Structure formats: structure tokens, C-alpha cells
View 1: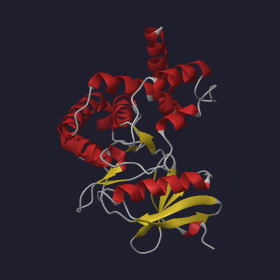
View 2: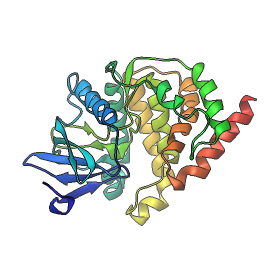
View 3: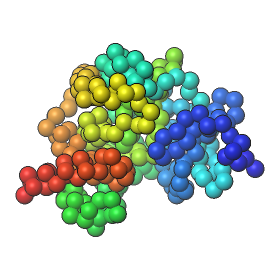
Length: 272
């Protein structure tokens, strides 16, 4: 039986760690236990995208190591776009363009019916949670009812750190938050993260100092590339960006909590 100490750690994020597996494969091992349905819908989303466009690693199966579930997938050799920006800040415009082009491609994929809808995901917050205050959750649910729906695949956590750039072309990773719905909702969530997302540990000092300027350039380049591929109503997208602060709040990122709550509370007051 394989144990975690026997595996070589090659990367990690908030939700999972990436270990070497067999030749040409890696194991995405989740930090916490997950319901089998959650693993299944992440795998289904990746396979749905791969059937249409070559933007995700191949999935070979699922396994469990010391009680932790994992997905065995194709190993992709190449940096993520956020790492590229941190090491070569002058590439921020190019990285934004790639991010926008890839995101627009994903939004051409119709989601399998097995994928939960975005509204179903938000419905889980009814009554509030330990991270989302009840009055914020109830306000958001009312707003969601008035927003346009759809049947496209929504990544749910799409940002430069989740786009790898091997020689063969961009690849998108980290699919546990995937839902089915309107692409504008996914676009809004990405804009929210570009504007307010906390930087991961280890970012160079120069990047942290220049973060505000870099975020602005990244957003401009990302939106320009995305809108060349898909027409959007930015007023609707901005409403989505505010609403998606609810599920971002549920992610439990302490550094972002105050700003996300302030955004939502201001929106609640403005809508009264």
C-alpha cells in the first residue's frame, strides 16, 4: 500500500498537493476527505472539456492514499502563468491575453448534465454557514434568481495560477469547483479574483509591491482577449462579480474575508 511519505511532492495549493506517480502521471491528492460524487463530477468536467478542446490533462483514474482521495492524471511540464509573472513581470500582458483566450474557449463547452448548476451550489448557503453570514446568503440567493442561467461549463476558480503553459499549449488544472451555468458568472468570478485575490506565499517582494499595477494590466489584457472571442454585457458581468463574492467567501481565505464582506455589505445597502 502506497503511503504519502513514499511519494515525491512536486507542487501544492490550498485544496490539494501534487505528487509524482507513475511515469508521465501525477497524483492530485486532496488535503481533506471528499464525497465520491465530488470527485466524479470533477473528473466528468475534465473529460467533457478534453473531448472538445485539448485544454486539460488526461485523467487516468482515482485512488486513495492514507484516507485521502486523489485523481491520477497526465503530468504536464510547464510553469503556471502566475509563476511566469512572478519571475518575469514584463510577461503580465501576455499572460493576461492567454488567460482570456483560454477562458473564452472553455465557455464554448456544454457541461454534462451530471455537473451541478451554479445555483445549486449557492443554494447550499441558504440560512448561512460558518463563513457566510445568513443575511448575506439570503440576499445573494434572491439576486441569483434574477440572473441569466445557462448550460456551459464554469471552472469556478479560473485564474493565472491554474493555467499551465507547456510547449504544447495552455492547459487548465484544478477543477473541484466546476458547475454548469452562464459563462458571465465565471467571467465575473475571475475578475473578482484578479482584483481581490490574495497572493500565494512565496511571491517575490517586487511582485507584492507592484501588485496593484500588475492586477490592472492583467485585467485589461484578460478582458480584451476574452471579449475578442465572446461578446459580453459588462454591466451584467460586474453584477456577477459581486455575487460571486459569496462563494469566494465560503472558500475561507482569511486574507480576503474583510474585503469580500465589505463588497457584499455595500451591495446589499445599494440594492435596498
